[in-house]
Length: 395
Image (cartoon, rainbow, N blue to C red; front, side):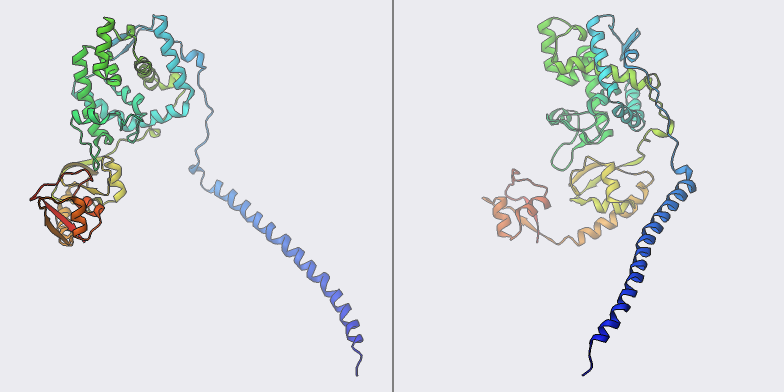
């Protein structure tokens, strides 16, 4: 029998010889991959920055005045054409406070300025058409920072922060499907109407703005109690005492931004929205997707132009809709064929309400979920149904 030891002895030198070569290869490979990767990234970064220098604008050094100099206000000062008595120490102190608080948040003011390009032109045109002071546009700034989706814990919504009752009083539709307070253009018309009526009540735009904040009845009560008709000499709730001074501070900054160190170029301002306005008479609930297809655009565009639409459908009834600019003609041609096709595919049965019926019982009787019955017929759990009324049942 052959002794296996020579094989072991011979194998040992071979393994000892190969191992260092493999280690050497592994060391070279482990070094080469990170090195080449890093070299590639470096070359890519350098070539990327040098190949397209126009993509990155050069940074500018900030230059803005000290806060101390910013609040050194020289008179005379007016708001809505009415004299602001900054010669009174208490009034000047309140105005300086509001200026300092605003100027401390420079990023917020930059956003205000940029949004003025989108919203101020329309507000100014509506105010000019109604022969009202242009300064009233600053009320929208302090109410919502010019954000259409702004809301408050008191239920106010939109750029002009209408509460539901006041919005309805001035022609805005507010229900579970549509909230026109959120539509900037519709709400601006309503706010103009409201402010004009308030000015008629108090014979002062300053008092009209104060009433816009605290309510006309509350302001009238304070005027009668204190026997004073001058806003600056009235003792009012803290929020209302700050209200006009905040509007004046916004006016000072936004009407002369360079004085306060804001140097926005023309292209920095957000452009106004461009759209076609149409009147839609919906005979039944209409999906927003269908409206978008009729206009040759996207669902998102229709929702962005119509923030008053709260759901995926436009309820039955008359509605003002905003479409992308230039698409109204296309919409008028394509809407009727598409809505006809949609209705044809709308396989629903009609149910005639009987005495003693309830929505829950009708849903159970027809084997459909209650939520679907309500949504299909634009109803809520609190809706009242009457004998003879026809409901659509969607299986």
